[in-house]
Length: 389
Image 1 (cartoon, rainbow, N blue to C red):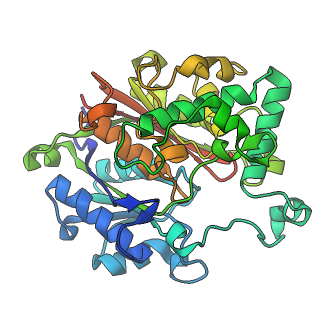
Image 2 (cartoon, rainbow, N blue to C red):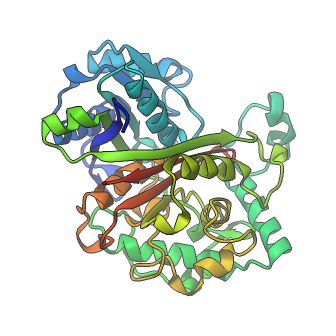
């Protein structure tokens, strides 16, 4: 055992109603509320925090350009370890890895990871119209919808190469909705059928409206410390058994293979090797679901099925409650919430599953969880393997 093993000791989020924060809040207040909840759960306070890790798309241009110093100022702390790594929605899985390394090296004792967004309340969600600078010159002038256009290209190519169908992608949305129906905090809880997904408006062929994630507000926080400190606090530690991260491109035009999520392959391989376990040891998986195709490609890349077999793997509601493969158990970005960058909520749900706190949606006997975030346009990937033992 490491002399300073890093563990997760608290998680927190903010309540939503119809996808919006219940009370009007700034993006800083959203993060402060989530952080307060996570620290309270951990038995700690903000003055204990000496490591701060943040990512987001808010306040750019402006204070968000120095996102970690901005949050440190708002929290009233002077952390001795900081990380503002932003690789998209996978940033928070990378933050867990970076915080673990910092804690184990003695660079900090208590690390706080935060994210917040009020994009739905502010009606500020827009990724279109990016300046045609650098690599964007190959996409922006041609009017490709962002980000769904890139994901649609990957989906169409996967269909061409492997015979994947829209109905198979719809299986993912339907299964995820079934988990959301067991989660009182989920934004979308109405019953959903494969037929309803296929008859929803086509946004970017072959992806329909219900193949796409929600647009909501949200805030989340994760608190990490040493296993020794967790024991002293009387808190159940969630162990970080393995992690990995990688990226292959930013713009979809530079993706090496539209049907192969190489970043997830690398990140997953590193995480499993570090954890010293196989895929069969995973009891619950929380996988970024910006779009249904994201999930399918990630399942293949992480080795849960062969390349090209993702459609068959998810068929028959395999990933729904009661199925053989527990996936995105809070309802995911497709039905729970998606405040722009979803990766921190994957971690929060995994921790709650491993602590047995999920009520109707609890996966019985969950001991080991895989969390994988995707960032950009299938650009980056980061994997964490967590365990309660």
